[in-house]
Length: 158
Image (cartoon, rainbow, N blue to C red; front, top):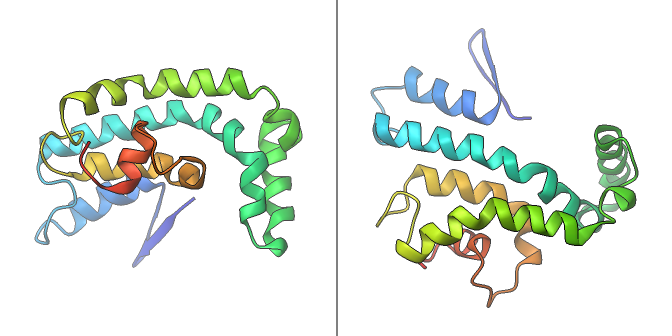
């Protein structure tokens, strides 16, 4: 979990950090752009949590091998504690989790069929926030894929 410390203020969680920085440094260039963009990004932030369970079960058993050998035990033990089962057991029903993931991504697929980014013609904060949800899966998405996660990771318009 990300944490920042600003003087005596400690802020946890990516969304809380972004909001704090936006408010605290209002005289600096904005992170979100305007209130509409901020609220749109908040929606994307909350929607991305729907991806979590399926995404974890699609990548955890393979992702561990992307880590440095000395980091694997911590990754395994912390994730298995959270999941209440081994990584292999949690990831065993891949078709089920792929279907859940695909269902959660369907709104993005439909949106990207109409426009290049979440906010329309430009890559606003909402699109960048959404791409964070897929960054752990980047190596598992073929370069030729038209899936929304490839679009978000490449930064190229659809």
